[in-house]
Length: 100
Image 1 (cartoon, rainbow, N blue to C red):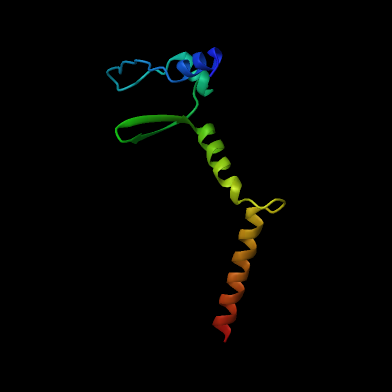
Image 2: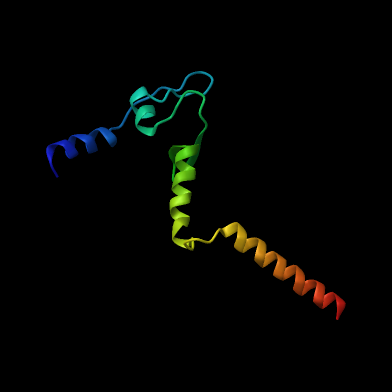
């Protein structure tokens, strides 16, 4: 790993100390907000895993989930069109069964 990457990794993984105020608020330092691309007023999502608080911007979560689901997408086919076709077929079968 070259020196630039070592320094960049060290900055990305650095532990930052923050103090909670009386109202339970934490200030996310500017450098971290910048690296996470969090803008003032933006929603962040938090979850607790094994006693560790994880924070992610709403936009980042959407992008991450979209990336996870890309492997299921068929090129040139909209999932919504497939879903509508499946529901119509199901409704047609139910109607046929009800009439028989």
